[in-house]
Image (cartoon, rainbow, N blue to C red; front, top):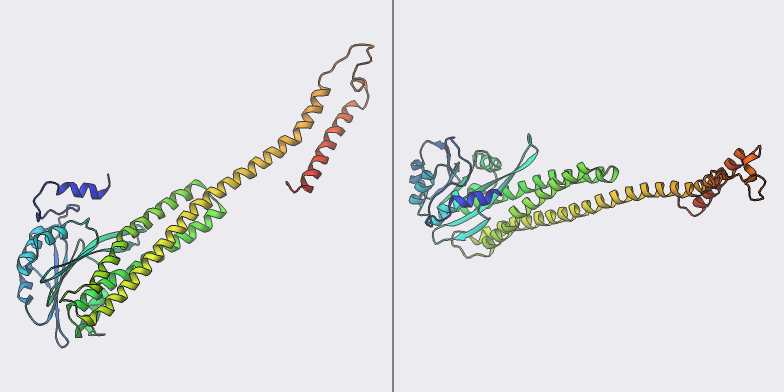
Length: 360
């Protein structure tokens, strides 16, 4: 059964807003990191309790609270109580099978996206749900596991490079979305290399094992499309929306993310077309090989048909004494050699004829 069906069964029949973590059970401790900054000041620390960040809610500086781990729903509930988040928003955060979306509330904007990463050890694509909450002076990012694609953003904040510390929380949300979308290109690069390799091997040696690899690549492409396609609507809503939390000066940056998203989608669609073409190549290659085999067997059978006829005639061995209908070659000294000469001559003539017709 698909995972989303199993996860969805956990919340069936419950009241709206009930916090039920739909992922795998974990015993690890939730990691909470706080980054508070403006153009002049910067503070970064790991919190021992979620309550430590509540004092930064209404400060004029930009506060970024990053939560690694959503299996402890009590922490999510405390965040919702302090930052006045809707119960349905909290429910969506702990439900890891959410479709990428954007919801504009009066005092915050809620965004759900899929962060894709490539596991170098297992050589597979992993997916993780990231929830972003944009407030007037804060950004809250909630993800399933520790480890993400935001390290470059943290380095820019620490070193005060670029314009990130001169901008507000909406620019931080843009930076996080841009990092997620940019890493999609890394995933596409790995997938493109696999497609090129299997395509070359497919033409040279179309064995059934190649077909299994093609099916695996096709599943990856479908998985990518499912994760990326709704993101276009999310970014488009951020660009065209009228939320007071997103400044007009930030719209151009979200437009850039939108362009990258379209580029990713176009690449995925081209990969899907290529994969479909690879199925056709495999079937054509197998069919061509079968045709070559049948061609050789047909030529062999065609050559042996007249030889079999000659051998059948001289294999009757009719001898009726002084009858004029006897086979004179039966008692002829060179009869055996004569029969061989006829058969060899037929083979030579047929081969010459086939070559002139370019059948072989």
